[in-house]
Amino acid sequence: MKVKLVADSSGNLLELEGADFVSVPLSIQLDQKTYVDDENLDPIVLTQEMLAYKGKSSTACPSVEAWLNAFEGGEEIYVVTITSALSGTYNSAMLAKQMYLEEHENAKICVIDTLSTGPEMHLILEKIIEWKQQGKTFEEICEDIPEYQKHTRLFFSLESVHNLVQNGRLSKLVGLALGKLGIRLVGTASEKGELEVLSKCRGDKKTLASYMEHLNKAGYFGGKLYISHNCNEELALQLKQNVMMQFPNANIRIYQTRGLCSYYAENKGMIVGVECK
Ligand code: X90
Image (cartoon, rainbow, N blue to C red):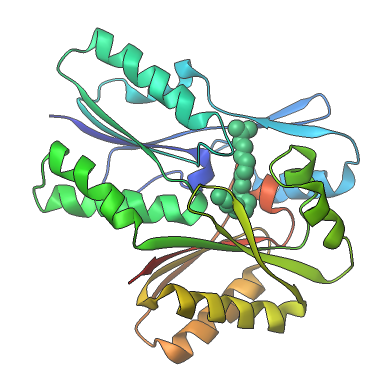
């Protein structure tokens, strides 16, 4: 059985160690220009152009065709998507699954709605690789993923929610409250897969304290903690330092967000995926 792992580009991954992996891009539209969130996109340039651009902008989920291309050649396929509460990505992947199975009777496809995004998707993908290496079957993996999802969480901090509000992914009221300079919104992916506001903080120090508080509340125990940030390695490194003080053996990774997450997290936004008790 040829095993394939596929995720939409909100997972911020272009490749994945130990797997035959394909990233399926969402796209971002500023003015007349479309940015496809693939390896050719420079998220730093996108962020700069976003800062300079004052007009309307939007995003679009992958087409069914794009998913079908990614599935091609796969016999045992695991598909990891951004939350279906905020994007049509999961739906288009489910349609593609149906079509692929009509053409490939012996193939098996498991589509996972992460009810989250970014680094939490990364954690789930790595867990699938680990289980495959241990020899778990397709059926076992499909059954065990929801169990693993109970032990992962997503936290984020945003300096601007302009693009989330503009695209109807967050209420205008929250956006207004955040309008003041220097205020960051700290939040989490809710159980329903929506944005949930946890606190509003002024400055990096309070933001970091808020992360630590919520990590501890969630039962973070020093396992994997993957930090994706948009042009804010400084804050990511500070969070790493804070976490290491409490959990010296924490498994921490830091990386730049790709296009979709850069667009919604905006300049200086940070998204953190963690394993919890
Ligand atoms: O289908 C589309 O056009 C994509 C829409 C995506 C909308 C939300 C993306 C959020 C990305 C922002 C911080 C983390 C929020 C997590 C909530 C579950 C990142």
